[in-house]
Length: 377
Image 1 (cartoon, helix red, strand yellow):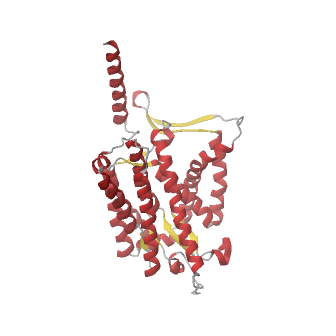
Image 2 (image 1 turned 60 degrees about the vertical axis):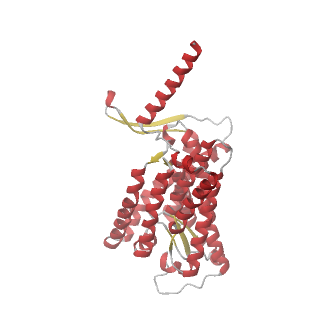
Image 3 (image 1 turned 90 degrees about the vertical axis):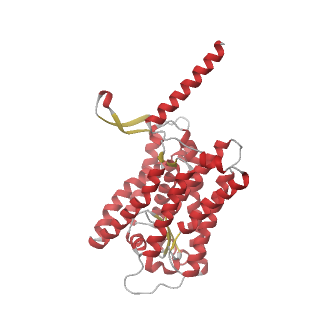
């Protein structure tokens, strides 16, 4: 997981600058401000809209849009898995040819990016289809076994409109595959981020604290303790980071001196912010206090990251500043409002868990039977 914010002042060293020893011209204040501001805006968009879509996703019944719930055990293991993956990529880039590795990764993210972008633009594109558009329903179903032992592996429902969105996303995919243009990279990166915030759900606030706390240590260690993360970030030619050129004003769309922000710095705090939005809704007070508080905390944390990086001229582990802000601000508000117990007792079940589904059905049946008993009395 790339989770570092790079310094545009030193972008030639960190994002694949000229290999011929030539020195880039110094960054202009306008170019730096534009790069920082654009990264901040691009980070906020998938968090805000992904959080809103996560509410609809949690209420939905479509098997293809069911969220993946992260438990406390998953959260505790995640930093270890992420560290092994990061170190493995670092060793791969050291041992094998970077060109062939990036070719394989490009093909892999080409497919993933098209699917993610298609899912992202589908709700917006539906508004542009005419009423009489011939829309047919399809279902992609893969099962394993037979009879009572039959198990669903893939159950994806889609329609003709989704196929149109898939075609449009494929155009962006081909553009990315052929040119590796930074705009195509960002379109895929934004799609990955929004889908992550929408479809990855924490089951409670304690799990969110475990996940963010573990990745806080992970981020600090791999950025300050070693050169592994920065090396992988500049070698890894895949849309796992958002980039914006600081020399856009001078070179236009062909600019190549980039500042970058890892998608981990968006998705990880984003799924915690989305959880707080769903907690706000569960309180049924018609306010989104915790969501707006955590969203403001994210802006503060990322802004502080940019400020520190600008002062010290060194890549920063953004989670070092984002985690205390995104956890501390909402907890402080909960203390003031006397809702700490409610916050940490809020629980979301896994809709894919058969036990949770069974409990839900039993609860519904029990409520229905109680209602019938009252009517008979």
